[in-house]
Image (cartoon, rainbow, N blue to C red; front, top):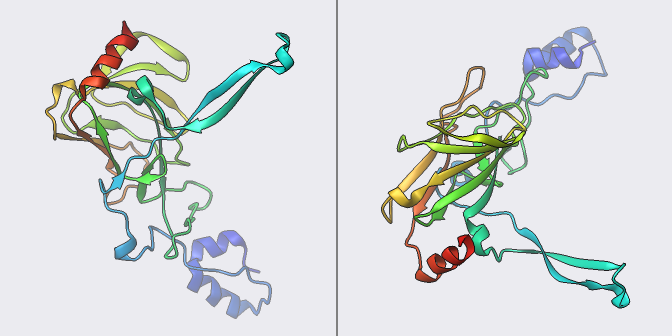
Length: 242
């Protein structure tokens, strides 16, 4: 009898050959194991071509008291993209995936040892470009990959500033050129875009770590493009931080 582990070790054609020799009618159905995405070239994501997408914010739109009773407060919430000062406080969920030819998620757990994709996603978008203003941004970064760890760094070589981890705020802000970021870990970082000119593009790259399985573009995470800041945004920021 051919076990599932033997099927994975032998591959589709080897397992079928073994089954034929054994005369086994209860062979586990097999398909070739994926090693990278099978998308057609026209459907394969291109680094930096995707538009960054921010998760919506759950915000209250109505508060009050049921029947005017102060012991029965209520609040109604809705998802919104109205950000205000929160436009400079950005969640980033980084993951990797591989896809079948039909666009569905591919799967190969390498004998239960790991699962690595060849496409990097940020908030579900492959290698997006985010337009940023010449301001300081706070990014709340979560790695949601199953196996892959990351070592993010800016293409300019400038430091990012770690202000918080899973354990909360750090006692002293740490400027780093890169940091090791494992799966399910959270870091909060500051990036100062004030030093860059309007139109400049800065990549958030991935230096990777030992034991990762890397592909052509897994050294890229996303790109930032600096755009002009409006006067109204600057005034609103001054009022907020005053």
